[in-house]
Image (cartoon, rainbow, N blue to C red; front, side, top):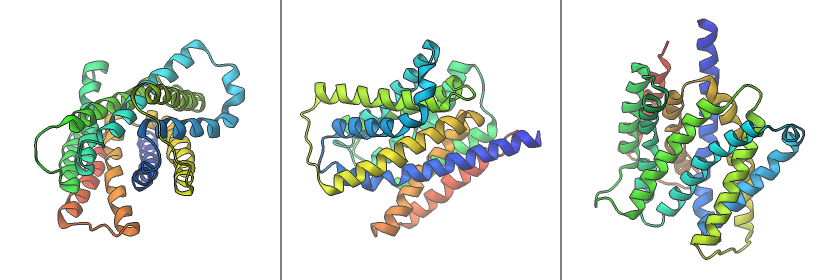
Length: 286
């Protein structure tokens, strides 16, 4: 029992590190989108991420089975859809609303666990969900004005990310995380490229700022972060992982405060504390 508990803690700490990496992406993406159209940006980012991963999995890919390939695609579908919906939604809604609505994936994950796996999450994890959602609201302080098109797109983005979190728990087997990560990232690049061709007028200005942002996002926020997610998340529960991922908004706010001189209000500080409390609450599971 103690060994299993320590395994959960180790996995959750690695996922917290992944969330920290993802938290760095917000200012970089915001800067990059001034020089490139959103869907083309996603296609390039994930294509570069796949290129970075490939040398580490090239031998394993030769023995890739149809089952492994299908599971990789299943991981890539909700990931690519979620990324595209989030990016498109940001064109019509505020950043604070986007952060709040994206964070609602922590609500959808336990619902999917009950519906798909016929399993009720631990009450401690559910308490963590409630604390985390409340904390996200205080941290982002989304303004009023009702639900617009961007809000709706971002809400569907949260549902897509919830499916991706659940699929990682359901579909990843031991010693398969490298290949599955490559297929997931590569399929996201392909689907984003197709969507860019069909739904937007591609725009690209190869500035030094854009190239630097793409390099960091492709290597660290895509290749490294998703590799760690796919490896470590199956060693915890989907609901606990979703609560941990809500820390992304906390890290983003802290980094914006440090590097962009953005003010961290009392409400935001309270929200960050509630999210942290929710994550700790979710750890008290047997």
